[in-house]
Amino acid sequence: MHALGLDAILIINVRSFVERRLHVEAQLGRFGLRGQFIHDFDASEITDELDRRWFAGGELNRGQKSCALKHIAALGMIVERGWQRCLVLEDDVVLADDFPAGVRAALEETSAQPHPFVIYIGAGGNFYTPTSQRVPGRRIYPASKGRFTDSYVIGAQEAALRLAHIERQPMTKPIDVVFESIDRAAGIQFLWLEHPVVEQGSKLGLFETSLEPALPNWLQGLRYRLERLRRRYIYQLWR
Image 1 (cartoon, rainbow, N blue to C red):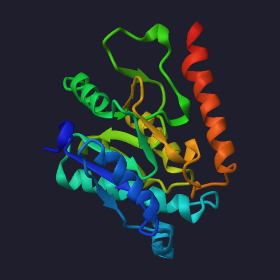
Image 2 (cartoon, helix red, strand yellow; image 1 turned 60 degrees about the horizontal axis):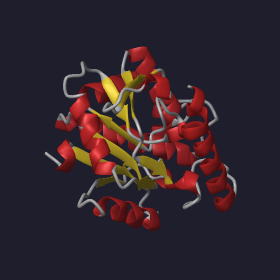
Image 3 (cartoon, rainbow, N blue to C red; image 1 turned 180 degrees about the vertical axis):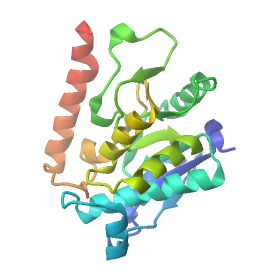
Image 4 (spheres, helix red, strand yellow; image 1 turned 90 degrees about the vertical axis):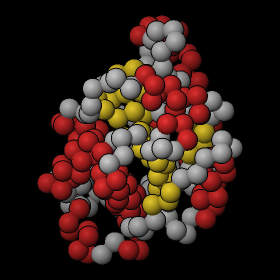
């Protein structure tokens, strides 16, 4: 058993992204934690055969395809090893000071939760449970959609369901959209941690995004922080 009650921590990373690798190692190291990197399926390793097997259409670039295949590799490892509480992180994550407490709360509050479910512990998209639905002392809430794939806790049953769907249907959209569609179809419950304990460094302007065109780093960071202020605090005044 890993620290915090997790079976493992898997990290999505490109071999050449050394800065990101050092960043996420330092983030975890603050809490005495280490993760295992998923380095298979860098963009340069995607053969025509892999492309035909897993993807269709022309919407995705090679970076998006690489990210998707790395998440699939993580799911395969989770199924193979029978892990029930595996945390999957992308390499640009910024962990809050209360990250350990948030993870522990998420696991404790879902210990009797019927499977299948996936716990999103990050602030992907700046989505938050309305204040009116929150209960003092409670941190996990059901949601109608997923957050982004920067940080989620998943087990072997849910990973197998995702893989089965992807095997049947080639991907045409980014992996976060694919996972949300699969989870909804497969009856996998979306669960959100409130408040989230992970943010994306790319959204904060710490890194250039490698998946899609983006604003300059400083402007991306400003835009994200303004959106966080609006959705996490101002909107909550009447929700």
